[in-house]
Amino acid sequence: MFILAAKITIFLNDRPKNLKEKRSIISSLKQKLFNKFKVSIAEIENNDKLHITTLGIAIVSNNKNILNQTINKIEDFLTSIANICILETTVDYYSQ
Image (cartoon, rainbow, N blue to C red; front, side, top):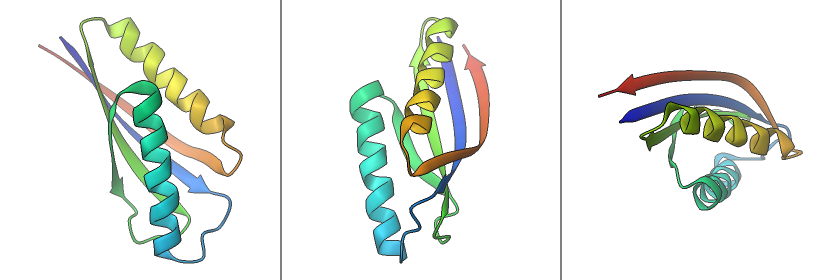
């Protein structure tokens, strides 16, 4: 069993006016990622900043290549969204 734990910091280009609007944008984004990729996802850092957020993503598989393909597809999906820019991605692998 392999586990991928990713931390993706993103910048919201559309400049939310307040934290409530930011939460709405992030909530929608998390739901889209879950529906498309079936991954566990949460906002883990930069909760109080308007334009930056960090998402934590966990993926479990019996094949490490599937983990790599999935995180690459997630990054491609995020970069395809016009109002989002990826600032940093950190990926850790765990095996048992």
